[in-house]
Amino acid sequence: MTTSRTTTRRLTTAQALIAFLTRQYTERDGRRRRLINATWGIFGHGNVAGVGQALVESGPAMPFLQGRNEQAMVHAAVGFARQSGRLSAQAVTTSIGPGATNLVTGAALATVNHLPVLLLPGDTFATRPADPVLQQLEVPSAGDVSVNDCLRPVSRYFDRVTRPEALIPAALQAMRTLADPAGTGAVTLALPQDVQAEAYDWPAEFFAERVWHVRRPAPDPDELEQAVRAVRGARRPLIVAGGGVHHSAAEEALAAFAAATRIPVASTQAGKGSLRHDHPADVGGIGHTGTATADALARDADLVIGIGTRYTDFTTASGTLFARPGVRFLNLTITGFDAHKLAALPLVADARTGLEALGAALHARGHRVDPAYETEYTGAKERWEQRVDAAYATPDPDARPTQAQVLGLLDALVTEDDILINAAGSLPGDLHKLWRARSPRQYHVEYGYSCMGYEIPAAIGVQLAAPGRPVWALVGDGTYLMNPTEIVTAVQEGLPLKLVILQNHGYASIGGLSESVGAERFGTGYRYRDADGGYTGFPLPVDLAANAASLGMRVLRAKSVAGLRASLAEARGADRPTCVYVETETPDTVSGPPPAQAWWDVPVAETATRPSAAEARKEYDRQIAARRRHL
Image (cartoon, rainbow, N blue to C red):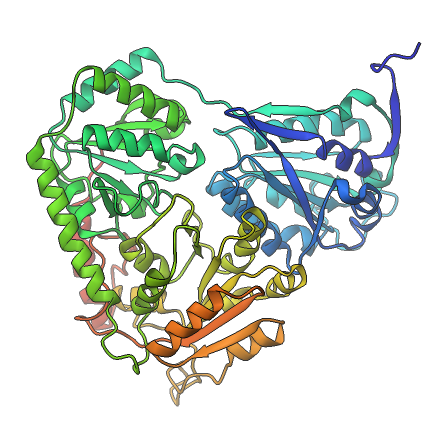
C-alpha cells in the first residue's frame, strides 16, 4: 500500500506554492483564520506563465484581486492585515524589474509597522539560458544579484527559490514569520521565472492543512514582580499605549486595568483607540502631535508604562518630553528589542496576557493612584475637550470649512462602526490631537512610515476585511496626486469606500515645517512659477474631483460647511465608491486647531545668510538643550 508519506503530486513550483497557501491557517484564542486570504497581482513576463497560470488553475481556492500599482497592492494588503488583527494576510505577485522594485516602499511600510504581507516577485532565470534577460540588472561583481535584493533590508524574511524543492523550507519559514507576533512584517519569496514553471514531484504532506498558533507569551515571574514594585512606588505613573495593544486585542484588558488602577492612558498614533475617548482614563494622543493633557502628564511622570510601543521620535518629542528627574520606564511588549528601550524595566509578554497578570498582581495589593492625581488629569482632559469643541465649531454654515471643521463634521456624523484612514501630511497631526475614537478599529493612521499614497489602497484592504462598515480615506491634494489609481480597483470590486479630498493647493504639513525651520515654504506649493522662477504664482487649475470622476467614482463637490455636512451624510449612505471634494480654508490662530504641544527634531542649518534660517537655528539650539538620554 502507498502511504501518504510517499504519495506525491506533480505540479509546477508556482502551482505548488498556491496550493500550499490555500491550506495555511492561524489560530488564536480558539479562533481560526485563513492565513493567506487572497492574492493581489499585476502580471508581466516574469510571473504570468508561473504564478499567473497557477492562480487560474487554482480557481476559487485562491481568490485573486487585480491591482493597478504594485506599491498600492502592498498597501491594500497591509490595510487588510491591520484590520484583521494580523491573523489574516494577503499575498502580492509581480513581474521582475520595475514591478518588483515598486514593492520596496510598501514592504518597508509593512515591516516598520509589524504588519504581515507575503511578496511574490518574479525574478530572472535561475538557469541563465540567456544573460541578461529583459529587465535584468547586471552587477559585474556579483552574478547572483537581482533587483529583488532591494527587498532584503525591508523584509523580515527573504529567500530566493532557485530550485523547486527549495520551496518547501522557504514556504514554511515564510508562514512562520507571517504568523509570529514578535517578528512579522513583509516576507519575500523571490521566484525565478523558469523555476516557477518547472514541474516537481511534491510530497503530499506539503499540502496538508497547517494551523499556525499565534502565541500569547506570559511574563516572567521575576520581571512581573519588578514591574509591580515599580508601579506601586510611582506617584505619577502614565501609560503610553502603542500599536501592540491593538495587535494583541488587548483593548478590554487595558480598559479594565485603567479602571482599576486609575492610571491615565495616552496613546501613540498606532495606539489611538486603545481606549474609547469617553473612558475616564483616556487623555488622548501623546508627543509632538499629542494633546496638552497627555504631554503635560508626560513631562511630570515619574514612571512611564509603555505598552506595545516603539517610542518613535514623535512619541518622545525627540527625547525632550519625559523631563522629570529620575523618571523610570516600564515596557510591556512582546519583543525584547523594544522592551529594553529607554533603559526600561522589561516586561516581555503579550500585551493582553501581561496586562492581565500585572492587573491581577496590583489588585491583590489593593493598588490605585492617589485620587488627587486622578482629579488633576480628568480636569485637564475636560479643558482639552473644550479646545477640541472650539476647533470643530462651524458658526457660519456658508463659509468654506477649515480642515479641523471637516473633522468636526465627520465627528458629528460617524458611529463606532466607521473607520477613518490617513497616513501623511497635516491630517495626522489634527487627527491625533482632535479625533474622538469610538471603537478600537476606528482610527487607522499609518504613521510608522508616514507614507503618502497609502490611504486609498489601504481603504480597499480595510473594506475587504470589514464588509458592511463605512470606510473613509482622508487625503490631501498632495497625497491624492501620488497614488489615486486604486480608485479603479474599488470601482471594479464594487467597494463602497468613501474618499474625502481636502484641496489646499500643496504640501500643507511640509509647508508649515519648512517655514518653521527657515526654508520659507520653498517648493511646497502647487502653483505656477512666478517672475523670479519660484512656485508662488496662482494655484494650478487642477481639478481633482474631475479626475476622481474619470476613474469611476461618484463625486460630490462641497463648497461650504452646510454643503459639506450634506455631502458627507450622502457619502456615508452610498452603496458605491463615493468621493467628497472640498476646498479648505486656512484657519486663523484663534479658531484653528491647537498648535503642537511638544517639539520635534528637524535639524536647522547651522550657518545661513537668510534671516529666517538664522532665527530658526536659535530656536533649534534652545530646544536641543532640553534633550536628554535615559540611561
